[in-house]
Image (cartoon, rainbow, N blue to C red; front, side, top):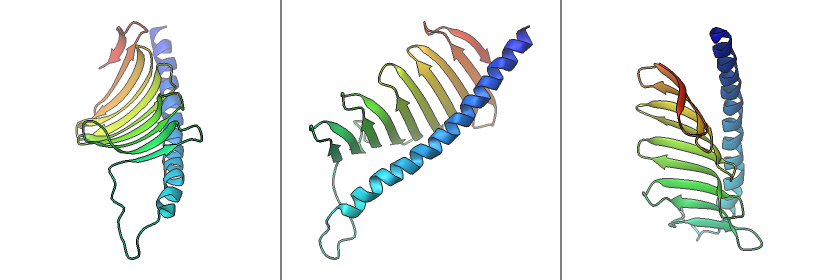
Length: 157
């Protein structure tokens, strides 16, 4: 019975990984599609090769911030998209250790993708409940399941 449960969890994780890869590709295309017109539309002085600014902010017709390109308080590069209610719906951070992509639903659910010299991970969470898949720099995989109270209910290794 226990191996059947494990097989079900592994199959579900494989399906989530596949969906996440497709989502990551879609996000990359959308990011490019959304930022390219902005970069092309910026008027530059004749002969200028660069645009120099600390932050690019895009607001909707009601004045709400919907997107920002700049730096986070820790001075890492940041591209974030807002939900129009003050919450971040998607963020891409270029931290020193490696890039982080976060997708949030505005009500405590999120997907995190990260990669660094120490490994790569995919985390799916809602509140304190979380599923984390990771691959260490050695190539060793790990899986961790956390319940709604934040208690680890299963992990391997």
